[in-house]
Image (cartoon, rainbow, N blue to C red):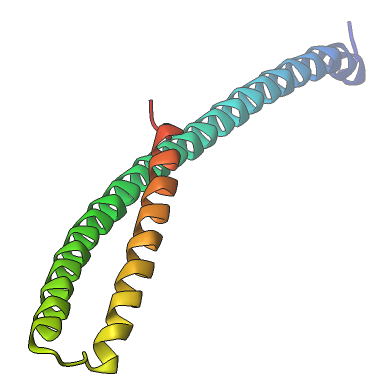
Length: 130
Protein backbone atom coordinates (compact mmCIF):
# COMPACT_ATOMS: atom_id res chain seq x y z
CA UNK A 1 0.00 0.00 0.00
CA UNK A 2 1.16 3.49 -0.85
CA UNK A 3 1.26 6.15 1.72
CA UNK A 4 -0.55 9.41 1.19
CA UNK A 5 2.75 11.16 0.45
CA UNK A 6 3.66 8.63 -2.23
CA UNK A 7 0.25 9.08 -3.79
CA UNK A 8 0.78 12.83 -3.87
CA UNK A 9 4.29 12.49 -5.38
CA UNK A 10 3.05 10.06 -7.99
CA UNK A 11 0.54 12.61 -9.14
CA UNK A 12 2.87 15.64 -9.10
CA UNK A 13 4.72 15.06 -12.40
CA UNK A 14 1.42 14.64 -14.23
CA UNK A 15 0.15 17.92 -12.80
CA UNK A 16 3.39 19.76 -13.67
CA UNK A 17 3.37 18.33 -17.19
CA UNK A 18 -0.22 19.45 -17.69
CA UNK A 19 0.68 22.97 -16.50
CA UNK A 20 3.66 23.15 -18.87
CA UNK A 21 1.58 22.07 -21.85
CA UNK A 22 -1.09 24.58 -20.94
CA UNK A 23 1.48 27.35 -20.63
CA UNK A 24 2.89 26.50 -24.08
CA UNK A 25 -0.58 26.71 -25.59
CA UNK A 26 -1.11 30.10 -23.94
CA UNK A 27 2.19 31.38 -25.35
CA UNK A 28 1.30 30.17 -28.85
CA UNK A 29 -2.13 31.80 -28.61
CA UNK A 30 -0.53 35.04 -27.40
CA UNK A 31 1.91 35.07 -30.32
CA UNK A 32 -0.92 34.52 -32.79
CA UNK A 33 -2.95 37.34 -31.25
CA UNK A 34 0.08 39.66 -31.28
CA UNK A 35 0.70 38.84 -34.94
CA UNK A 36 -2.92 39.51 -35.90
CA UNK A 37 -2.93 42.82 -34.02
CA UNK A 38 0.34 43.92 -35.65
CA UNK A 39 -0.92 42.88 -39.10
CA UNK A 40 -4.22 44.74 -38.63
CA UNK A 41 -2.40 47.85 -37.37
CA UNK A 42 -0.10 47.77 -40.40
CA UNK A 43 -3.10 47.45 -42.74
CA UNK A 44 -4.78 50.44 -41.10
CA UNK A 45 -1.63 52.52 -41.57
CA UNK A 46 -1.22 51.63 -45.24
CA UNK A 47 -4.91 52.32 -45.87
CA UNK A 48 -4.51 55.69 -44.21
CA UNK A 49 -1.49 56.41 -46.42
CA UNK A 50 -3.44 55.48 -49.57
CA UNK A 51 -6.31 57.70 -48.48
CA UNK A 52 -3.83 60.52 -47.92
CA UNK A 53 -2.51 60.17 -51.45
CA UNK A 54 -6.06 60.34 -52.83
CA UNK A 55 -6.55 63.55 -50.85
CA UNK A 56 -3.26 64.98 -52.17
CA UNK A 57 -4.19 64.20 -55.76
CA UNK A 58 -7.65 65.72 -55.30
CA UNK A 59 -6.21 68.85 -53.69
CA UNK A 60 -3.63 69.25 -56.48
CA UNK A 61 -6.29 68.93 -59.17
CA UNK A 62 -8.44 71.46 -57.33
CA UNK A 63 -5.49 73.87 -57.11
CA UNK A 64 -4.77 73.41 -60.82
CA UNK A 65 -8.41 74.18 -61.66
CA UNK A 66 -8.31 77.33 -59.54
CA UNK A 67 -5.03 78.49 -61.08
CA UNK A 68 -6.51 77.87 -64.52
CA UNK A 69 -9.58 79.96 -63.68
CA UNK A 70 -7.42 82.71 -62.16
CA UNK A 71 -5.14 82.72 -65.22
CA UNK A 72 -8.10 83.08 -67.57
CA UNK A 73 -9.47 85.89 -65.44
CA UNK A 74 -6.12 87.71 -65.43
CA UNK A 75 -5.87 87.32 -69.22
CA UNK A 76 -9.29 88.96 -69.54
CA UNK A 77 -8.15 91.70 -67.15
CA UNK A 78 -5.04 92.18 -69.30
CA UNK A 79 -7.20 92.52 -72.42
CA UNK A 80 -9.31 95.14 -70.63
CA UNK A 81 -6.14 96.94 -69.58
CA UNK A 82 -5.02 97.04 -73.21
CA UNK A 83 -8.38 98.57 -74.14
CA UNK A 84 -7.97 101.14 -71.37
CA UNK A 85 -4.43 101.96 -72.47
CA UNK A 86 -5.50 102.34 -76.12
CA UNK A 87 -8.44 104.54 -75.17
CA UNK A 88 -6.16 106.80 -73.13
CA UNK A 89 -3.73 107.01 -76.05
CA UNK A 90 -6.56 107.86 -78.48
CA UNK A 91 -7.72 110.62 -76.15
CA UNK A 92 -4.18 111.87 -75.69
CA UNK A 93 -4.21 111.48 -71.91
CA UNK A 94 -1.88 109.64 -69.61
CA UNK A 95 -3.13 106.69 -67.63
CA UNK A 96 -3.33 107.15 -63.91
CA UNK A 97 -0.31 105.62 -62.12
CA UNK A 98 -2.36 103.00 -60.33
CA UNK A 99 -3.35 101.45 -63.68
CA UNK A 100 0.26 101.18 -64.74
CA UNK A 101 0.93 99.23 -61.55
CA UNK A 102 -1.89 96.86 -62.48
CA UNK A 103 -0.15 96.04 -65.77
CA UNK A 104 2.99 94.97 -63.93
CA UNK A 105 0.98 93.03 -61.35
CA UNK A 106 -0.97 91.18 -64.05
CA UNK A 107 2.24 90.19 -65.82
CA UNK A 108 3.93 88.98 -62.63
CA UNK A 109 0.86 87.09 -61.46
CA UNK A 110 0.46 85.32 -64.79
CA UNK A 111 4.09 84.21 -64.57
CA UNK A 112 3.54 82.90 -61.04
CA UNK A 113 0.37 81.08 -62.08
CA UNK A 114 2.24 79.47 -64.97
CA UNK A 115 5.13 78.42 -62.72
CA UNK A 116 2.85 77.03 -60.02
CA UNK A 117 0.70 75.18 -62.55
CA UNK A 118 3.80 73.51 -63.99
CA UNK A 119 4.87 72.40 -60.51
CA UNK A 120 1.43 70.95 -59.84
CA UNK A 121 1.48 69.09 -63.15
CA UNK A 122 4.88 67.62 -62.22
CA UNK A 123 3.49 66.51 -58.88
CA UNK A 124 0.46 64.90 -60.54
CA UNK A 125 2.75 62.99 -62.89
CA UNK A 126 4.34 61.41 -59.82
CA UNK A 127 1.13 59.40 -59.61
CA UNK A 128 0.44 59.29 -55.91
CA UNK A 129 -2.30 56.80 -56.66
CA UNK A 130 -2.05 54.04 -59.24
